[in-house]
Image 1: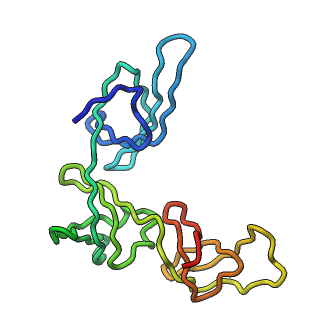
Image 2: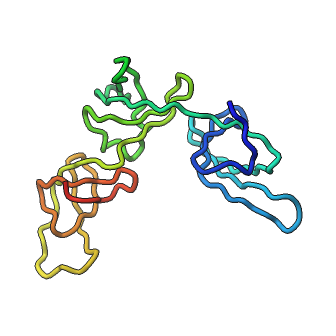
Image 3: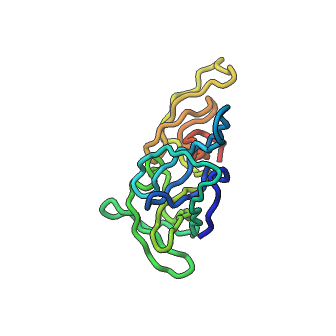
Length: 187
């Protein structure tokens, strides 16, 4: 695996550090008036989610890990485990449902998602950026409420509450951004 200098660390890089796999969440390059420059790196453990703040000098060498990305199709959920199938080899894997966190309700049957692997271990799963959902219930339109950026609450078919523009009514399909969990556009 390639080793990089401490000042080459960028957000999103996956590093092997202290016997664990860490993703760099935030990187600040600091040049103090006295002493050498360093990178203050906030890292998150990919296996257990713990956080760590670490300083890397430019002379420090860290191991950068490349994760293999595979597109896999969601099949079903059983006993808190999500079952996915590799569309090339038809192999099935099980991942814990809490891997997706608060984005779990947006996972739909047959949806293709990106799963990142380190050797044979699945570490991360990413949903498509935009997902189509149906509005189940929302407040009726209030006449004369045409002010810019006026939003009203709506409940989607997966139980998630989002804010939608006043023109969106019940039984309409909308597109939701899964990263921000906000309304994006009409479907």
